[in-house]
Length: 176
Image (cartoon, rainbow, N blue to C red):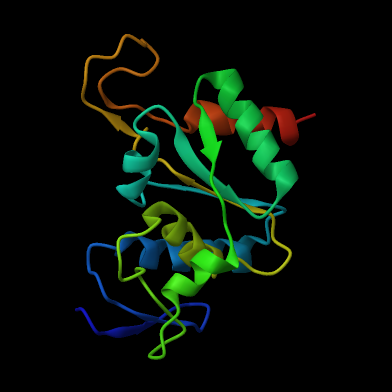
């Protein structure tokens, strides 16, 4: 409910201001769990996190946020190679302040209509451990298409966006 304070696996607390921004609450625990349980060398999450990324980028590019230049470049290159383009968007302390609240460690939305996809990524970033190379891809605009598209690899309806990109990334970066 709006006004509730919820606890997360990381020990941080979240003030819920908007129940429609529930996906980020689940994603917060998921990325924390993945780091804690599996200790990966890098962490990439894909989520249809915000409608704001559709407003910013439409249906042709996913929004990508990263704390690691090499990982961001590798994702961008894999996306270009597979026809699943990404556009890197900024992370910064200025946007992070938008989710500060005196009532908990953070709130789940900015509280005003500004930089929604960036604020969503900043929220997830608060659950990434120090030193963990991480990228978040907001695929809300690319995961689902309902218009007349000519691309046979990405027909109308669910597109499977990210599968080819991640497969290429793994081949390029992790397989010998």
